[in-house]
Image (cartoon, rainbow, N blue to C red; front, top):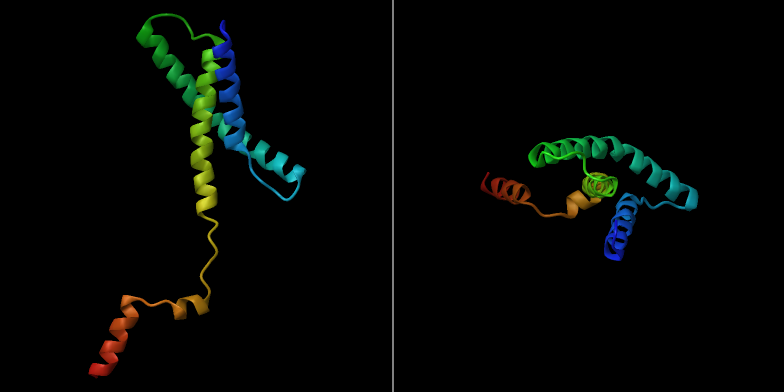
Length: 121
């Protein structure tokens, strides 16, 4: 990290990593514990994939390991992707269930055909 631009993009990637792992709650303690839980949940996956990608880059280039800042950028990027997909999984499953009233008021093709069949009989 020699230039100011590299330092700014590194900090921006780190902040994006935290932002994507942020989980909202009723108070600050719930926000902190939810975020910490999310970071600890995705960290093993991000570490593993970062290691695999770093080994592939090492083999392809024929040089040594990447510098620590590049490895951390790679870790943050992989962690952002995992946090995004885990958040999609969490929030997509939290739709409110349909109640019986909603089911009765909804119109559907099957109910239409039930009415048609009753009229034909």
